[in-house]
Every structure is written in structure tokens, then in C-alpha cells.
Image (cartoon, rainbow, N blue to C red; front, side):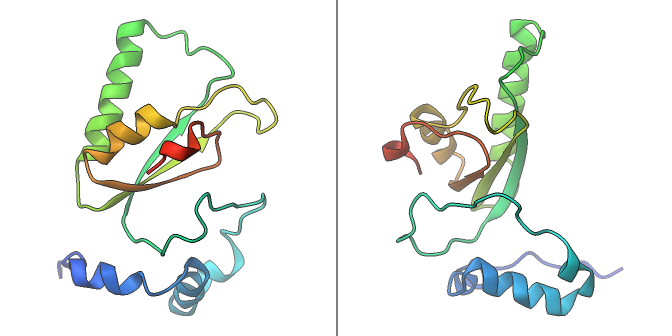
Length: 141
């Protein structure tokens, strides 16, 4: 079995010359299964449209705040610490992708803001992509 080497930093930098729709269109040519699915169904906004495209390795998570988890405080802290370890592991640069499981109209809480931005910069996070609420937008990555 052939082992693929990860893209080099130069390869990743070369990808920043293209926007997301261009990359998606190219991927559809490589794999026809991608042509009929994976489209967004809600508005998708960029917080910083003047910023150049970035490339990184996704670190995914799911969150919710409408209902308390019911887990003891120590267990909640352990989950959070596991998230930080997960984000810090693996190849860099990384992009955190967080799916908020709450109803979009609920407006229950915002995980990401000034504090999470500061914490995530340390392990090499370049950006955040989320369908959830964001606070302290002036302090975001």
C-alpha cells in the first residue's frame, strides 16, 4: 500500500491563490459523487471579506448551549481540555470548524470570542468556520 505524504508548506501556500468555489469545482471534476451534495442551505458570511484565502487542516467540533449537558463540572472541564489537546495535535496550520447544534433562532450562547481566539492561536489555529454565534468580533483570529 502506497503511503501519501502530506502537502508541503509550499503546496498549501499555492492553494491560497484560489477561492473556495474554485477548489470545490475542481474537486467535483476529480470525484463525480461530489457534484450532487455538500451545498450550503443557509447564508454563509465571511467576517473579513478583504482577507486573502487561507488553507489549513480542519479540527472539527460540535457544540450546544440551549440545554445544560448535565455532566459534572469536572467532566465538562475534561471535555474542554480534550478539545484543546485535539486542536493542538496533528499537522499545522489548522482551521477550527465548529457546528452549533442549537436552533439557529434560539440565540442561546456564543462559544467563540476573544478568549477562545487567544487560546486557539497558541496551537497554530489560523481561522474559525462556524454556523454558531460569535462575540467580540474585533478580537477574532
